[in-house]
Image (cartoon, rainbow, N blue to C red; front, top):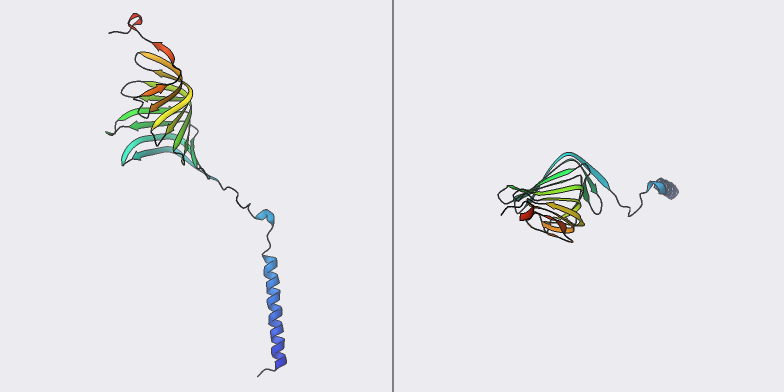
Length: 194
């Protein structure tokens, strides 16, 4: 049986070893403040894609097909998708026939709001009626399925050209309301037949 003094020495050695380990761990766990990321700093990342083909459906029915050569998806606290090199969208009716087409040089989809912002040479065509909308900026609301803008617009129809500022229209472009209308309308005297 070991003596009390040898047990006492053993306890002191163990205590000394543990305190040395404790000091080692404390010193090993110190951090350089430059290495610690700022707490609360917004983390962002970007996904990139080419040759984009994206279907939008509602109630198991295809409503639109978007094609674009290039896409960036910015993942932030308010994620959005950009189409900086043009985009084209075909909108379908319930019979899967194209009812309208949209082209723009730039598009941005705000995922949380479910709204699309289009700019630079925006053109929307109603296939059945043949009406064409031209504008510099246009919004599309996915929830209401409406287009709108407060900028200048031009609509070409079979018998008139309508200019205005501000517009609200259905997704299929079968109806529209223009604010501050100006334009030229063909009459019988200048070529419109009965």
